[in-house]
Length: 160
Image (cartoon, rainbow, N blue to C red; front, side, top):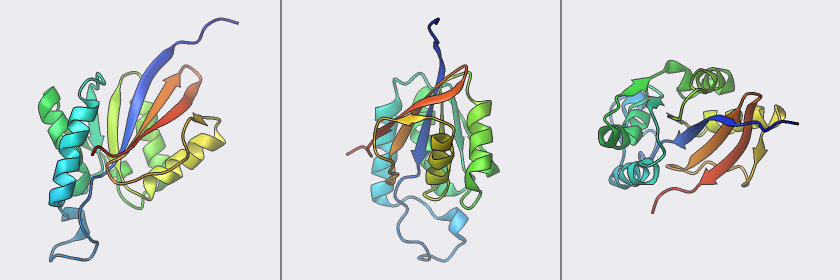
């Protein structure tokens, strides 16, 4: 049996803290990060700065784009927006985005309903999670992929 080499890593980030749903005047899609969330986004920038990420893709919700923005600024990469990562979209869109990004190191940012659905689907497909499934705000799952698909997931807690 030959060695199977990793093709890429995907960093699956849950958006940073954005306060309480329903507070504020505008639509939920426009809810900004709280001061705590901005600190978490800066911490994610530092946590992932050396991950050799070449693409950043976020849900169109402002809190997701703003979570990846400091990392994008540090790396000189624009945050792309993809509706398939939006809240309420389920795992299929997120999985399609993940598959499209498999040839390189990339980070995606989504929500507390999409990420557990994505992890559940990957578990059904045979991924091995090194850590217990969880998805705290500003946390990251590092998913390793080889030619056969996603093989391993490791949890990074939110930056302090």
